[in-house]
Image 1 (cartoon, rainbow, N blue to C red):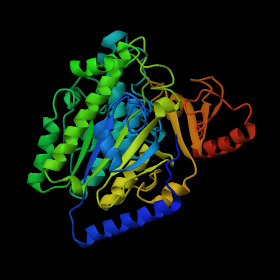
Image 2: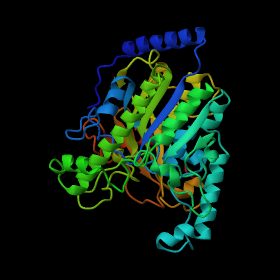
Image 3: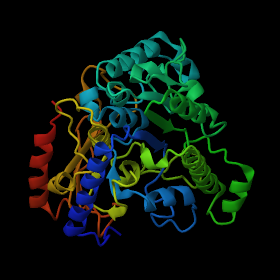
Image 4: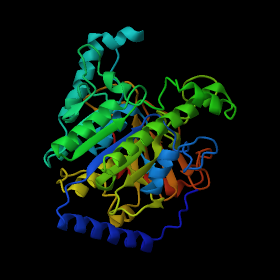
Length: 442
């Protein structure tokens, strides 16, 4: 499953091509590349044709993968939408930007839908939004290079301007709590026009642009077009699974529309496209919700995603199975356009094969859905995890989660069925030392 046939020599040859291509562009005075960041929402790493799914058809993402450096073992640090998206935008771990949870503490907020209108909830959301104001973000940093930027789709942090975007769809109207993204959630499901209008406006202004395209797809509600539901109904074990599969293809169609628009406007050759999912999802066969070991969990079903990076003429397409992280995108993109990254960003440049290969371990942490304490990220912790070669260690925090330490061999056991912690005690100790050196919640 993980073998790609890519050797160190292949990677080095690819890096030479990248450097020569980038240098040639600089010598020609070519304007900085546009950046399109495509983020799917609640989408399992298995659920693409190019990743081997036997039924789901994703021809547009497959095409993007063929044209990209395709990191098939990509990971997000946390398997929950809000902190994962914040990490993509900032290049920081959740405990660094402090947005660890989807929602603030809910004590005293009431029950049902009314709690999202309560003063307790709204004050907590406002505090989470201020955390985003306090850290560098890709749109703010790219603006130094003259970029205009646009937010479309999933966005938790109130008005788009809190992320540093120059424009966007999410207004963060008063008393909405800033969940999900209000008007931004129309993108993909109802229209693509705001995205196309932004791209066309950037062309008229002769400005490089950064696009955040993060539709609430295939996220529930799973309401695909009828013809796509009927297409998968005969193949899926239940109607709930069929609806989710159809949502994946519907999302893929919107990716195709976006790529086609870039082609029509003559922008594809000078546009970096990045793709990943914010977290995983395993569809429950019995109801519209997610199954265990996926969203919100410590397992690959919630954490793993392909990460695709297409830059024509600079990044030679190939598939790589070295594990990488979503926090790597920020330093990668900033380096690509010549913007100085903030000191201390923990990710690596995915266009630097030496940096990718030199990192022998990656880390992450999963947190409670509702925060326990907004000021102390460690109080919201459920699990820390790390991945070294094929070995994945999962450590519960002991308060919010009291389960066992887990160790999995992801080559022999990619769906994490056989916990080897009791038989690989020395390996657990060695990896625990590395995990503790990364971050101890105290």
